[in-house]
Image 1 (cartoon, one colour):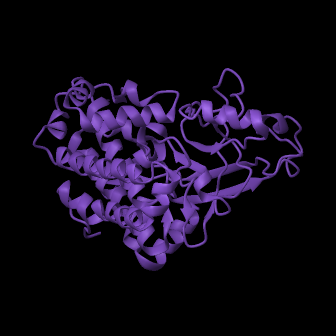
Image 2 (cartoon, helix red, strand yellow):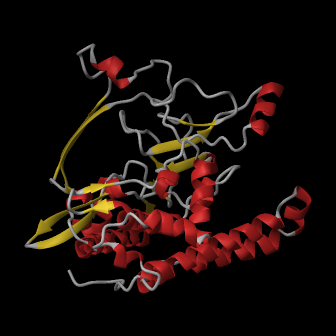
Image 3 (cartoon, one colour):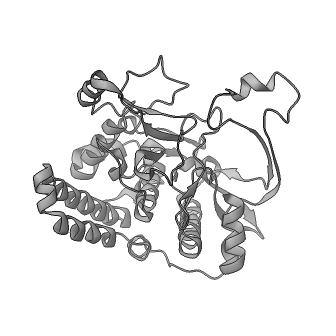
Length: 360
């Protein structure tokens, strides 16, 4: 997908190509094409599987991880570079990244200027065609495709009802054992393409995922504003945990739970309760505390996402039963449309004090 992104930007917005991964060379080999037998177990090859894993070699430009960025000002350069690039990729080609996280924000210097780069388009979706790649890379334990296991029979139905809050956030290769039938569980290889059953999957890294994707029940279609919300959480995470002296990130404990629903509950409380926000932000480095100040643009943006969550709560009340959902369908659709308009690219950049377009 990354090659498609760069090709379409070249055709429409070439100035933004430098903010996406610059591939020099790549090759993909199936298990059958690799004669060395030791590759098969490493790839987890199962001849009966629908989607066999492959070995892929990539050569691309060297980028720096965000940990080495050093200062708040440098971070803002990288951050706004990638938000703009993400916007123009979606605007020109309807390709949505869907996995925004601090790991995927990188940078390099070009002609002496810091240039932010949005990396890892493995889980991106072309929303023109609903084409996406739902294969998690081997060994990648933080970025996961989450799917509902298909319950079968009466006992599975009971298990699903009993475990509706157990939306597991532990990748399958870290789990102590197989989850009980009916639980949400991560899948290294999806069994159906995203376009076939789009709402059956949750895409992303839990700490940065939008609130809509962290609720009990079948998740909604992934929207552009969900990625904007992920950028918002990435900004908070950087400001609250980055140590420029050690060039390392700490972590927000309540956003690292083993349940996506628990992460969602904790993030909702973060939005709603000042005491929790103070607790999360108290360890911020002195040079980054201005980013988190009560009068900062980030605080204004937090109010917008709190409003978005408040509206979601009211919409849930409109469909608390099947009868109410049917009766209120038109009202629900109208209010959902209003939520989509609450946070746009223009609003996001304006609140944070950044221009929507910059000269190359």
